[in-house]
Length: 288
Image (cartoon, rainbow, N blue to C red):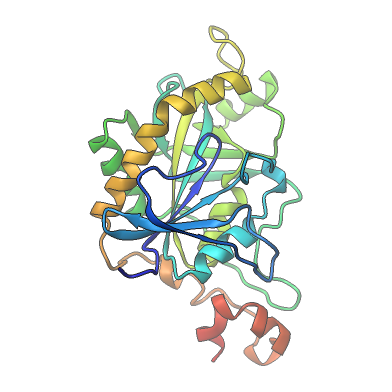
């Protein structure tokens, strides 16, 4: 079996392993940006190699703002992974996106602060395009896989990422609704942006756990409600991942794999040897 994973899965709240993963290798990794959130599990799923990383650590010990997003994405990239699916909890900002549903967003709004949101800097300037922050091709495969697995799926909508760890005030929630946001979460930024810088396809399987706090007919979101809904959806998430693995084409035809082609603005002659070593995983073939 080819041990280079054909898919990376980042599990969020409530999803701490991948059922059905066989012949598991537990890989503890280090990166130039620190340690990933957890060891990476590499195993066989449907005859293909898949990697799983627990975003919040073993036992859910890492808050959204404390996640080392750069180390997580770097580690998956270092394993040769080209496609990543994020499994995340979210609150709904729309009446028709109900708890228990799954949303595959197509847009992203960043309301976080203080997070390390790029691999670059310190003498290396890169302006990556994220007009379309999620991979259309991978999102389409994910949509079909969720539908075949029996999920109530919504394709499209903007995901607003807040810093957390607290939930929204009612004024904030209503403001995001007025802005046209569809769902709300705490982890997709900067994860999606870093995946784009790493030239990886990235899509989100967002499980709606609640109506945030805007819905006056519903109780405000609580951890207990979030966990209860996620537990009910865990089998759906795992079945959908298995279906993605089965239906994913071997070759990519999207533009994600060339995201840095025209993004580096720093003169190659001004990239220091230290920066070349640190960023070789991303820029090596562009600097040679």
